[in-house]
Every structure is written in C-alpha cells, then in structure tokens.
Length: 211
Image (tube, rainbow, N blue to C red; front, top):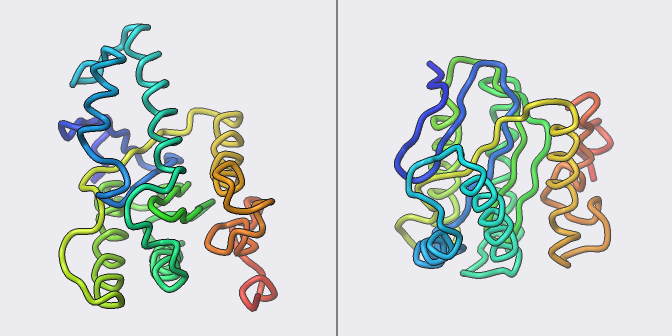
C-alpha cells in the first residue's frame, strides 16, 4: 500500500501508485549527520517540512551542498570497487518489471541514484529497503565485515512533468562526468548509460548485455 506524502522524521517522502521517482541513497559514512545539521542551521531550515519561500530556497541550497559533498568522495567509497558496484547494480535490475520499472541509475563510489516508475502496490520505502538489505549482506560478505552500511533514510523526488523527467535523466547520466570520474556517461560502467540502457525502451539489447 502506497503511503502518499509522509515524513519519517528526517526527510519527507512522496509515495504514489504509478508515480515516477528519482531516488538517492548513500552509505552512512558518505555524509555525516553533523555536517547536514550544520548546513541546516546555516540555511535556517526547520526540522519539519515547511512551504515558505525561504525554506524552499534553503532546501535547494542544502541539496546542492549534499551533492557536492557526495561527489567529492567522502567515506570508504566501497562502490568504487567493481565487485561491490556490481552487487548493487544486480539488485536494481533484479526486480525490474516486478514492483517497479527501472528507467535510469548511476552507482557512484559512495551513493546511488535511481529513477523508477512504480508499477505495484509495494511502498517506495519497501523497495529501497530491499535494495539496501540485499546489497549490504552481499557486500559485507565480500569484504569480510559486518554491520550497517547504508544511511537509514533516503531522498526521493516525485517527477512532476516531462521537463522534470528529462532533467532527472540528464542529472543521473552526467553525475560521474560532473564528479570528474569519466569523460562521458557511457564510460561509467555501473550506470544505465554504461550498461547501454535505453530510456525509450527501458530495456537493454542482447548486445548491450554482452558488453
């Protein structure tokens, strides 16, 4: 059952049937909580969502700061290891056509961007939790450690219209280029661009799979 607009005490979430959602989830060490709290105080952002112009501008600036911080490569950056990134990518692909339609994704060294269309009754939080849980178990086993890997919450943005959709696609595809990790999107292996995924068909060809 989808939850509509709800707040888990950290971030507001929008969860609707058939909606297109841009989602970011990150490792716990990628963005320390005290850094975010410091920025929120500087930008006068309240702890609960507010609809004032000041709070909206503050949240936009906060999102920009978070994106820059993530792209700088803080934390252990386990997803820079191909074996770890492949685990996350396999998890995203596994339920395509099940609870969601996978449109775009990009697995950065310490965080993950995903664009999906909801196609089942499973809440968005349940989908993200499944991605995190399965990948954490496999990554921990691979690197020989135990414990939590992912930040408990996640950021999602409901895609409002076609312009917003194209902007989200461009952002996800160009994130590794913007971060200075490659020259063009197709060079980043663990992404929809590097995988050969098409936003027109939302399905890779057999040739793409073989690369």
